[in-house]
Structures are given as C-alpha cells and as structure tokens.
Image 1 (tube, rainbow, N blue to C red):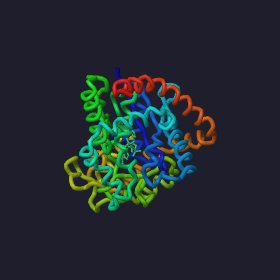
Image 2: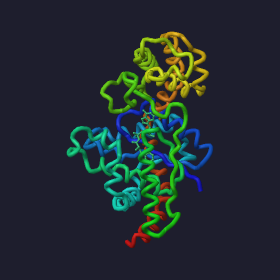
Image 3: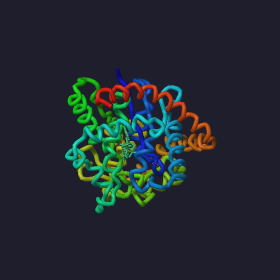
Image 4: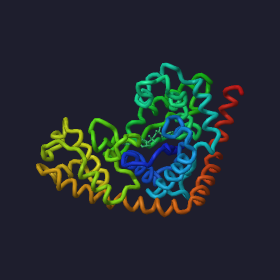
Length: 333
Ligand code: TYM
C-alpha cells in the first residue's frame, strides 16, 4: 500500500530550497497517494538553533505548519502533525538505535557537516538524528519519501535499518523499503552568494537565501544581487559546466515557472544576466508572495493552527499505534 511521509525541521524560516526541493512536490503528491506531513520538532532540538529556546521553537512549529498549509498542503486530506505529539516515533527510534551499527552512522555526511570542527561538543541527538528519521518514516510503513537531494543518504540508511530489522527479527516484509522521491529541476538549491554551498537556514548571510516570508522587494533585491560569473548566459546546457551560480539560477527559474531548463536556456542564450534576473525576480515574486500572505493570515490565529496539529496527531497515532505494538511483540518487550 503506497503511503507518503515527509517532514521539515522547525528551525528558522523555510526558504526557497525547502519549497522547491520538497514542499511543492508534497502538494502535488497529494493527488497521487495518501500523505503524512510532519513538523519534526524533536529533530529541531538536536542542534543549537533549536536547543533550549522553547519560545522560538513553539513559534517555528506554528510557522512551518502555516507554510505547509499556505503552500497547498490540505489538512483535511493529508495528515499534518508534529512529531513530539506521537510517542511511537521516539519508541521506534530507540529500537532502531540498537539496529543501526556505529559504522553506518559514522558514514553520515550531514553529521560531519553539522557537527563541524568540534565533534565532541555536538549533541548525541545530532549523531542519532538519522535513526529518528528512519523511525518517522517506518512507524507508518511509508513507501515514498519526497525530499531534496541532501536527504538521500539518510533514506539509504532508513532502507538498511528496515532490512536489518526484518532480517534479524525474522519478519520478512514487515517494514517496506521506502523510496526517496527527489523530483523536479531544483533538488539541490544553492546559496545565492556561493554556488558551491547549499541554500540553508543556518547560513549567516540572509542574502544567501530567499525566505518564504520575504516580501517582493527583498526577493527582487536578493535575486538582483545574486552572484554570477562575468559571462553572458550560455547557448546550451553544456555551457553551464563549471558555472554553478548560473546553473543554480536557471534551475530555480525552471522550477518556479514549471518550464524545462532547455527552453529557458534557449530563451536567454547569449544575453546578460541583468534582464534574466529581472524576469526571474518577477516569476519568484508572483509565486512566493501569495504564500507569504497566506502564512500571515494563518498565523493571525495560532489557536486554529494548534487545533489542526492536534487533530493530525490523533490520525497519525491511529496508524502508528498498531505498528509499534507489533514491533514490541517482535522484539520481545
Ligand atoms: P530539513 O528541515 O533540513 O529540510 C526540509 C526539506 O527541504 C529539503 N531541502 C532542500 N532541497 C533543495 N535544496 C536545498 N538547498 C534544500 N535544503 C533543504 C530537504 O531535503 C528536506 O526534504 N532530516 C530532514 C527532516 C526529516 C525528514 C524525516 C524528512 C526528519 N524526519 C522523515 C523526510 C522523512 C531535514 O533535516 O530536512
């Protein structure tokens, strides 16, 4: 039985990478399969950005929920909830901490990036982050996981955990092998200041990213000031080789306008970036500012957002409860 699961961390404001790499695909997938979309607040406390900041965390949970809905996630159809409301995530994560091997965890590149130079000061939660993510997905026996490219390795680990559990507990086919859905032309949106870096919530420069809450002026200014090389736009896709900033802007344009990369390259072949950027800014403003407006409207009624999350948690719990019960029986608890 096909089932979608995905989630985002409530740390800071969502940005264009989150939208193009994941959220817009979530919205479309609602037409194809039942969907469960989670605000992963337990993951948010693994890093400094969310740790010991209860007021900020609560605000970020509501803001991310509002972003999901404003972008088109329909809480009447899809299940929308927050992770900490369904205890089965934490229970299964513990079992998976015992299934996963240290050698597997040590290969996780995101931990290496996020823990930085001082690994010994990173939280243990940051290290075991991927086993909680595996539990998020598998506690619903989800089959498809729409994410950006940066989550691919975590999905591979999830599959390894599922397989080892099934094997070790002699329960073939108990957990499915969930497939990542990495869709569209902007699966890895890069920083607007540096084509070698991923667009990220934690970049200290706000000019490096377009936030979903940015107004039209901010969006236009960030695109106009986005770094490019001094050459005009290329004549064909091959001409993008070694030009990560140009490629990034074209990918963003293609994704926002639902056009192919090829048709955009043809249209702007040989032109200067200034005109291209003006057009890109227009497309981005048209697409993103209605989402920001809708978010503001939703956030004016936080109690309603809390009610939506509560209802979603009850529906999620109904699916997770029998699975965790079976897991406990298999494990021998
Ligand atoms: P998070 O909160 O970092 O990001 C949320 C989603 O946005 C995608 N994304 C990007 N896509 C393209 N370009 C970018 N620059 C970019 N930055 C972020 C991410 O790939 C992700 O899809 N571990 C996850 C959250 C999570 C999860 C899960 C996801 C927890 N449990 C279970 C799926 C299933 C994370 O940190 O995403």
